[in-house]
Image 1 (cartoon, rainbow, N blue to C red):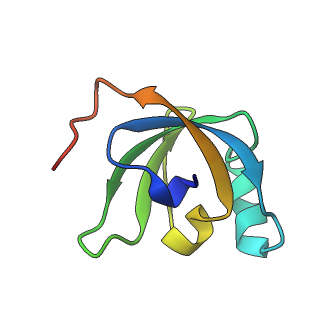
Image 2 (cartoon, one colour):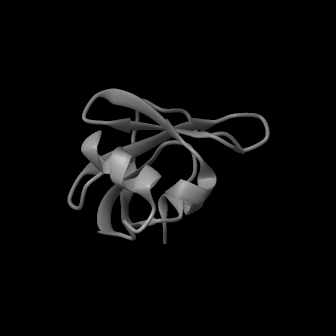
Length: 84
């Protein structure tokens, strides 16, 4: 499972990262590192980009980049309402 597979309100922990892409390396400097917990907040109407909460900060990334982050789901955030 990757960040791209999450749904609104899902909480997940980053387990692995494919860091060959320089844009992914840049996201790592913003807190998307192994062990970090993230909450999937939203996606734009077309589904790209995605919005995540990382350490209390909102971060947007492309779905293609999100596929580089392997995660394990750890539940749902009660503060984020799920749709559909």
